[in-house]
Length: 169
View 1 (cartoon, rainbow, N blue to C red):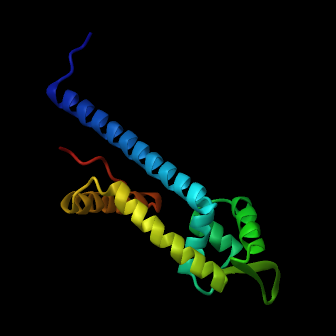
View 2 (view 1 turned 120 degrees about the vertical axis):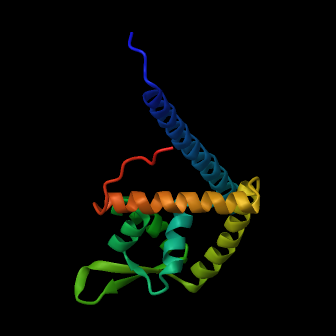
């Protein structure tokens, strides 16, 4: 058996720490998402995917083509179609044909949909504040700063703009 040198051992240790970090991020995301899903379902007879669709449309007041909505949500058209159909049948969304393109439609929130989403969004914000309230303001800012930096680097890497190696300790 070959003994690892100090730099190799340190590199292995930080690699394991980064793996643990990833697993903790994933677990925290799953736990928060599960809690939000439960609260939306139990108290408001809705789902997190429906909330996400309404949120995207709320931010795009003039509406989005179905393909653009799928792109914004990073899901397939098939995933969005059923949700949009149900929201439309409940009067929260309207479909508008795109002039000059018979296959395309723009979907947007109705007044009823905007009001309903605004209520849900306020509740959602309060729930997230409660769930993440275990972090004090400074910890929250630090976590946001670190994750913002990580997001930026990962997005640049996905876009092929950079090729980075892990930061050294």
